[in-house]
Image (cartoon, rainbow, N blue to C red; front, side, top):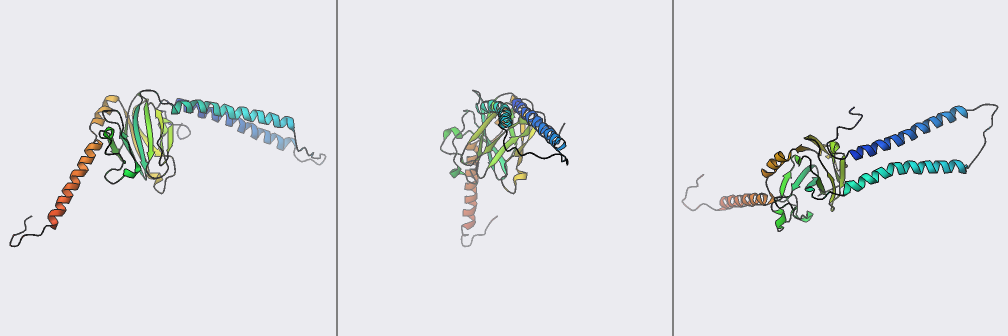
Length: 272
C-alpha cells in the first residue's frame, strides 16, 4: 500500500501504529460528520423567498452536547497515546545501550566496550582528534567503540536503549520502520528504547530541520543476528586505540617537521 501506508514494521512498537489508527478513525468519523452536517444545512436552510432567518445567538443544550462529544473524542485519542508513551520511556531492565550523536550533517555512534559501561563526555572536549568529546581520563570510556559517519549496527531480538546527543543544533533521530523517533537537544541527553524484530537495512533520517544540509543527513541501520553483530563489533576501533593512533600520527608529523627544519651540516650532501 506504499506510499499511502506505513512501511512494514521492524520493531516492537506496533502500539504506535494502533494509536495512530485510532486517531485516524476518530478524526475521520468527525470529518465525515462535519461535512455531512454542513451539506445538510446548505440544503435544508437554503434561501427561499417565503422564509425569514431567525437569529439565535445561544443554544446551551447544543453547546453541552458539543462540549461533551469533543471531550470524549479528545480523551479517546489521548489515553492510548499516554499509555504508549509510558512504555516508550520506561526502559526494560537489562537493555543494552548505544549512543547516537548528531551533528551537521552526519550521524555517529558509540557502543560500550567489554565493561558494558560508556564513559563520560563533554562538549567542551570536542576537537578534531576527539569528535565525540569523550573524557580521556575516564577509565570507563577507554574501551568504548566509536563509529563515525558509518552504518549503525544493532543486534536482533533484544531491548536497546538509544541515547541521543547533539553537538551543534536540534536534530531528530528517526527510522521509519522502527516507528521510533526523538528530538536531540544540545546540552541534553534524550532517549527511547526499542527491540528490533526483523533483520535488514533501513534508512536513518533527521526529522528536524537542522540547516541547509538537512536533506542529506541520512544514514543506514543494519539489524543482524547477535553472532554477526558481535563479530562486527570486535573488529571496530576503541577510543583508546583511536587516541593512540592520533598520538602516533602527531608524533610522526612533528618529527617530519623537525627534520625538515634542521639545517644541513656544512659540506654534507642532502640525501633523500
